[in-house]
Image 1: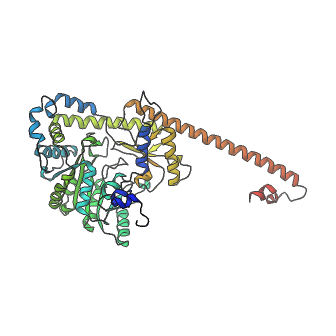
Image 2: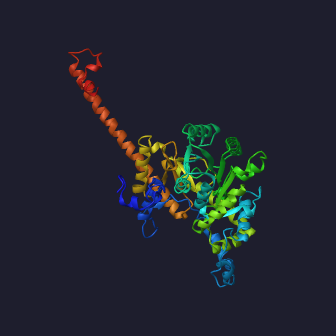
Image 3: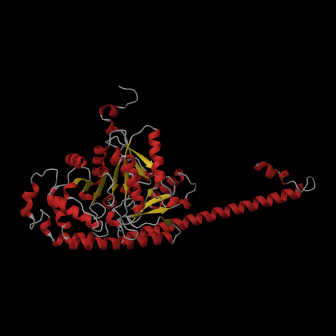
Length: 484
């Protein structure tokens, strides 16, 4: 037996026995707390409410209505059964032509029809997770790094690192400028990698941001493109929340930026997209790679054999996304409902003195609980998080799990529940804040009371000692001496 290895580590591979999946993160621990005691409006009213899952359930009624009215879109209905044979037989990894065309057109609509996408560059994958991993395999070798602005989605540590051996190097962004990415921060991270003799292969941007809910400005995107061209490294833009924008400023795709920049090396530009957030279909596992690099398109397409989207799903999605009237109605209504839910939730937070980062996209908000920390440390953040999980019974995600550089920030999701559950969650938050304030007031009263008693004894002591010591020597008091 090799020293330091247990039986499992000897029998299995390093991937099977390491913790690269990141499941030991507080981000996933919150999910486990929910799974063990899930809230239910009638069966378990005191259970944990899931506010750690960025899922879009606000427009399911529109989807269900369309599916009901278009039974031929599914090969599993009597009306659609005639297509069963053609769809069920073997399909190669290029995917159905109509699927790629419909997805390309949908991506154009989401981006305001300002740009066009070539269906032949659409590579499908098993969700955005599979898309990110495939790109990492295509662009980097084990030990190479991608720069990633903080805070960033915890799943990136799994998606890009676990099986590929690629590393992520945080680009530290701070609350002082609303966590905006700067050229200075990029240069600092790049120089840090060079000093450690680590090869930087790319920059990964998440726009709109998870967990911030912010969109990147044109200036920031132009600066990022200039940076990667100057360093000759890749740029991966995760745009899976593109259609969750509900107010200004609006979303600008990297595709729009590079189309206006003839000097940009397009071989360095890659987009990750999916239908999990914008349409609310995470269970369908529809991920997309769109690369301007021919070699990457070719390699990623071959790799997609390990995570294809089923032809049944492709067939349904192609039919739905080809319905222009439905798509326009859905996008408008989804934006509307997200705006209303965001307003209700953030207003509820502000009524009890809780702030959040100003945002215009996403299925969540970046909640600021710095004033509620007992101490401004990540240990203090974890103590507060455990209290929220186990006492308030809300699964929110601590900023440290997103590699945030400052303690006290939490991501809280609001689009994965109905209106009544939102009210219950806000009520729990309000009660928690009021109890915390009441507890602080009691502690303050106790401190004042103790101070008054202490001062009374001090005055009594000074009176008793007055005849023996100078009244101008307060340090002569034994109480004062004892404290020192």
